[in-house]
Image: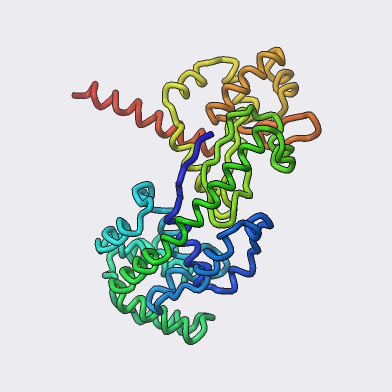
Amino acid sequence: MKYSSQPGILYDTVLACSRAAGKDNWEKTPLPEYAREKEGIPDLLDALRKLEIPSAAAPFFREYGGGPSPAEVYLLSRPFLSELIPGAENLTSRLRDPGEQIKLRNCLTDALFGTTGTETAEKENCLPDGVTAGEAERIDRSCLSSEQRYQTLLCLARFSEAALAFCRVLERAEPLAVSLHGLYRKEIGDLCAAMESGRYDALYRETAGFEPGHVRAYSVTLLAAESVRLIGTGEVLLCGPVHPDVLLERFEEDHIDVGRFFDDMGSEPRRKILESLDRNGDGTASELSRETGLPVTTVLRHLETLSNDLLIMETRRSGLKIYYGLNRRFLERAAKKTSSYLSAFGKEAGR
């Protein structure tokens, strides 16, 4: 069983602060039954709920239009996230850099105004502090309350100070989130042990067929592990309901192996299977056997390899039938990495 803290405790802290800033968000997402009964969890959540967030830092943690808060978006987009465990102190030093402040500001204004692409790129050259006339006008026209408008204007006008206030909130919240994270980690450990023994019925049925010892508890978040994904043959990815796609993407990035990719593409039976899935869409082993002319036993063996190498994934089940499909996102990224690998040889040859 393997654990990862990505996005980890710092993300959990930001999520808790976002809920504290929204207040009513805590009630919108009720805790799982076990969490309400676990000693210590309700008290920690209550302490986080009562967390005081200064006016200048509040806009970072507010959810706009039901999406994640700007602080969550910022953390999930930063390549140095893995360095920020436990992280608040490290993040404080990072956000003294004007370049990082601009990125955080962009996350806030994107959330406020729904801007992307060109508009975001244009803001890259703006100084972190100050409010433009256009921003003030759009804030005035927004559906924010008068208090929220004031907080947003204050945050933008003195952005450098607001970014440090943002960090100070995380420093106060982090010890609570660390304790909460520990309680959830123990709970997920118990859950995984139950899955491996077949005692956890709901998740066991959803992931029937995995081999004991091949459960990957990849992340634990504040609201417990409710998302279950198969990764490869017989392996299970457990993560919280907030960011399963982000975790899966990072997991795939860590497992792009150029050598294995070449092996898979160099195997004629595997190429036939991939081409059939590309041409016809999802299929079972029997359907792929008919399409490729390969024996079912051969197809099953190669499906296991392709699944373990993440080139394909299980898409659905119908009775005893298991359907497989291309993992297109992973294939594209693996192809890009392989292309870069080959280009390096070309550069060497040109010297």
